[in-house]
Image (cartoon, rainbow, N blue to C red; front, side, top):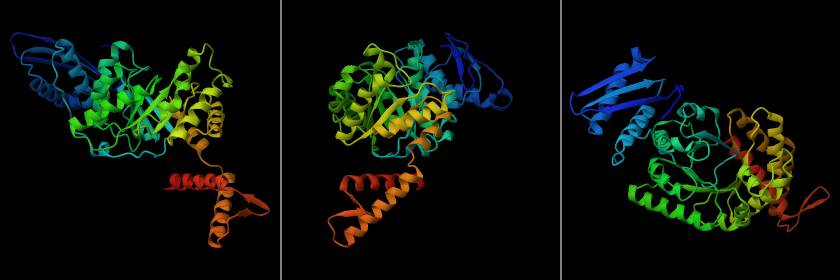
Length: 387
């Protein structure tokens, strides 16, 4: 493990001895305030893992207890891979909350699963969803440690109402990831590089098995990510593969590489794929969520990109930096002009219903039912945003 002295993290060096008891050394800038509680936690973990004789060195850079616990457990299991026990803190009450199939998912903030410094304050930025990532943002050498960090974060970190998501690794590896998240308050699981409906069903089956085994009652939903030409072609089959699917999304970096082109700001190369995602999601009755916008310094470019996504039928966007969240929320919100027009249409519709009229008109224009439905959706979104 190499944490490179990153704030809010730590690293352990554990040397097992045959005798001599425990020798614990803590190097930390916060030793004066928290040194005793850190040593107490280490002793409790040693007792839990039945470590009686060892030299233990902790280099601490401001890690919270859930991080210390994850790093210690990782070090123990590196020393002895046969250890199966899990050192778990009780879940905070905020993380026992339920989610809904159709909740707002305008913004989803990606956080690398091996970097706890990003976890602590992520919810303060008010994204609709937070994604603790085990896949592309985590180096292969860090993946085992990331599973423990993400597991502990799902139990201990207050995300202030953001939906708790985890992106697992590409199947079949990702199936093993599920045991670290399903019992520990995850709400949505992202399935990367999804190409076949069978992959969704495989994840669904394992989620159901783990829920039954651990007595989990809360709903856990799935969000397949389409990232290849084959995935695009099979988008509807994937979107409709499980009743647990709440949304379908797309990853354009892998998709454009798969079709042999470059991703551009204009986005002509991905218009077909994005439209397929929207159509597949809507046909399956779930949400369509757009890819991330990579240039975190270009707020105007982001705004234009979100408005385009909205015009295509997408309901949400991936974010890779907190500063993108507000722009995404503003761009997905109905404009004053859209709201006023929707109000007029809904009012005309209600008046026509009261009068028993089969035709709805607004001024000199006739309004058909799809227009009314669209207006009702606008007003529903307004109410949700204000509620």
